[in-house]
Figure (cartoon, rainbow, N blue to C red):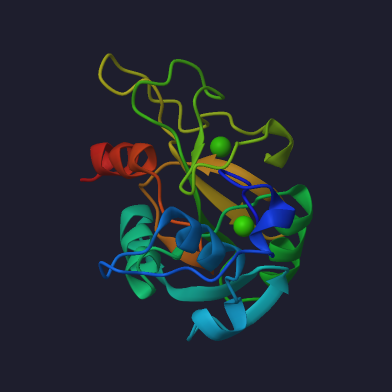
Length: 200
Ligand SMILES: [Ca+2]
Ligand SMILES: [Ca+2]
């Protein structure tokens, strides 16, 4: 993966040897490490190879969205999280992977902050990647739970992937399985805050 934050992508593959004199990684070394992320080596226990650059693990027991979030986060701190559909292609391979299992719906790494003002407003992926509206299934997100009050504007503030259906917003009132992803990406502070504010 090349994020091109400080150096051009080509440059990341042509780094000079870096002297580390204080026990810490230089900025250049950090970029080189990230570009060299190897899910085969760095994602033990994540055995599902569905999409380039990522490995996945299924939580097959019923869980709340914040329990699933914590579970995925704690597997491989800093590089694992609830699954993020970085593209529609990644969403589609995940949909194939959940067909014909004992559960139909699985928590994903999308969350809507409590400050959102419409059903489609302000959705975040836990990794901070852009949340493209084409990820949603038809008629989603829809806050179908329908409870609106002055404190919580929306009823459905988490995401599930449902077999034969797609990505939907859903409330925390039900328990589902979970999809964890290891891709070297860390969890954003904004997503952590949004999830913590929804815990109960
Ligand atoms: Ca992903
Ligand atoms: Ca919904």
